[in-house]
Length: 300
Ligand SMILES: [Fe+2]
View 1 (cartoon, rainbow, N blue to C red):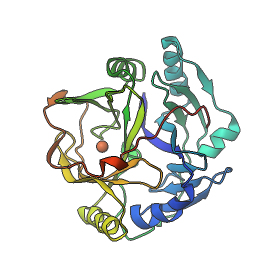
View 2 (view 1 turned 120 degrees about the vertical axis):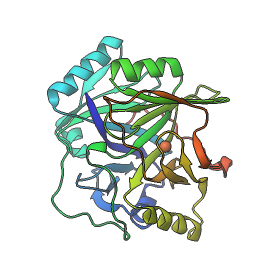
View 3 (view 1 turned 90 degrees about the vertical axis):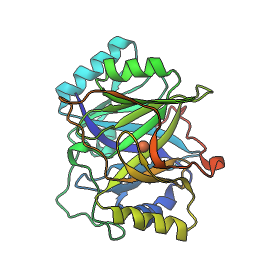
View 4 (view 1 turned 120 degrees about the horizontal axis):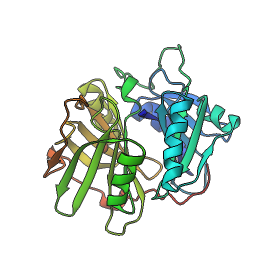
């Protein structure tokens, strides 16, 4: 019953840098500030979808999902509670900060804070991207996708499918790498999970998708011109066909900038196993910069 990825919040001492990084590099629109000074960014009709909150260190704060309405949010929340996790209903003040009508929230078995929101505020004001882009692929497919390193891959797989209702798209098994990909709408995956050798939970990346290959190329040029580290070179993923590269954001996490992702039809889809994550490219570099955001903050 979770319909799409609605929004994402991170905490970062470098939050102010997003006032230029977001519009000028990513092509997002600056959408004002939160009560704590958070930099809010917009990429479609939703009032904002990305918030970078001020804080002492880089951390993933919350992952916001859209459900149809309050009753659906409650139904998912009850399943989470039955699994044995604490679930809380957000205050009106917190809901207003997210620009949604309301949400329930909980921490998953790895400690990631998820929010089950309904009634996301959309605005009729036309999008004003920070640089010329033909727009972002969102709508029913939501903000994009997030990839998490969970503490226990088998437990995570069970939790996201059986409790939260994510549908398996496929699994990549390549040597040490094993990752599960899940869809909840036409986007091949809104969530993927993997596991690090340390079993430490970590936020691995956020993907946003542009409408045109040239938008992707322009971002690639900008990263080179501004010496923004490209942590994974241009390439194409085997499973969702996304042509993309990954850049290092000012807040210590990687952002995948993609184009041309595969649509899936849930009724026809048969989960697959892939032997490689990419069909070409996607060479990891600047491995020293792929520092991972921790998730152990009780804040936000
Ligand atoms: Fe990705």
